[in-house]
Length: 134
Length: 286
Image 1: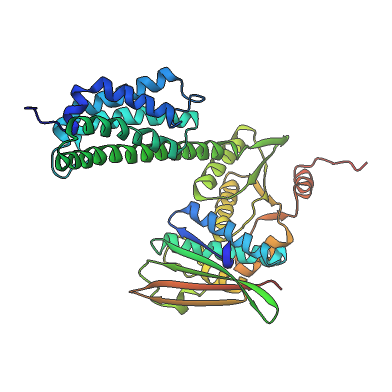
Image 2: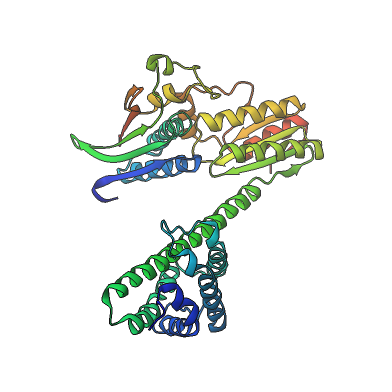
């Protein structure tokens, strides 16, 4: 992991597992506790799977940052999908356009320290997740 | 010389020279891998491939838009696939496979030079023609080798799926299944089927699912667990999920997933203790 960046291409369910592995490695590298690590890995799993199922695949990039002496991992996941028409609605628990539980997006937001989402019909959906070491 | 010399004609008329030249280069370039493939096999593979090329190339290679995936190249592709299959099993690398084919250029160029050395324009044309064929064949060989290897990986993955969900009768009327690794949709389906069959087979009243070995419980895994538990309930048995570590518990709460009507325990021991109480077996303390 040179300059602290790793990228995983998301095309199949197997790639979601690779993304989880990469997330786990990055969180281990910054010395996060197992609870923080598990939460981040789970959030990455949700977002990466969304990109595969609803977003026609995409890419997730992990980057290690440092701010004020605290290290963190930032994951940026971009897909090639049709975008999310109503982001606020999609973040509501229990709402799903597919067959899922409808907890993934809102759940991922609660599992990390910073959560950003941008979505448009032309550029697909971009989700940014950040978790600090402590 | 009245007759035109081309890559195709060299293949047919100087077949033996090309073959022996190629075998010699293979030996000197160390691409034979005699440790993995015997000299006799190597020779047979080289001969088969060259024979297929000699059959097809004179006509097909001159056509515009030369494409190895055309129907007329089928014999060459078959010969290549056989070689790739054989070499994948022996553990030959993709680079070695590529070089094995590419080393065919040397005898080709040598014969072409001998025959056409005087007229450089024709020589260049035929060198390009030979290069085009050999390179395409080499690329196809590498691609085939990689495909064969991927097929092996896929098969092994399938075998893993099969073995990784063994349902065990742990006590009279109690069955348990330990889950390890990732729980994708396909595996979840296998686990559910195995577990439901085991419940019928052993007349189990309690089914214990041990998720100690599952590293991530996200909404998809939770959904699979919920489905399995409700199927178990429909069959009149009770489902106990154990192996919920503190970090998993906190994550599941944050996710906002609820596991209603499912008994959960920290580890297999407490899950088993619970099961014993339910079926009325006294687990004596020592």
